[in-house]
Image (cartoon, rainbow, N blue to C red; front, side):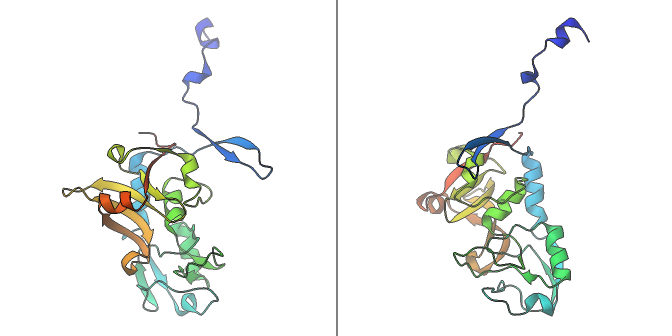
Length: 219
């Protein structure tokens, strides 16, 4: 090792992005965030969309307390798209494994009690959490802790628009009419799944949506 190298600063070696979280004792601690490129976020977003196919059997549709199947599911068969599931945080692999057993298809019953056991799929914040490589699920009220607030004009692919306590969408691009094209896990228009949607800027801004950029985005 050269004399210069042994005294070089490790601060130049791209330290991990840190976010502060409150632990169970109420103390604030730093947590390293996974890094991901914008192109990788969108690749993962699309992996839960039309390219994702799976099989549904009658056992995946058996009655369950506090469960309601997504409306696009008509019965046993082969389907595309990850279904909406209140409180859901399933990967594609976890979902397929669950369907091979007795797991239920999604859940569009949205009680305040949270996730219903043995239901699989993604809700809005579970979807964005997965696309941003989070090891645990954030809700719309907490996902802002791993983001920087930005202006609507600064939105780039893989950023998000969040209404705390309500809904979050992943920004794809602004179309020729100035509307925002989005990816989201939603029950809007009876999609009840991961969908590629379009919303006006006015609809989002007047609805209280805040533009966010994930702190771990690398480009």
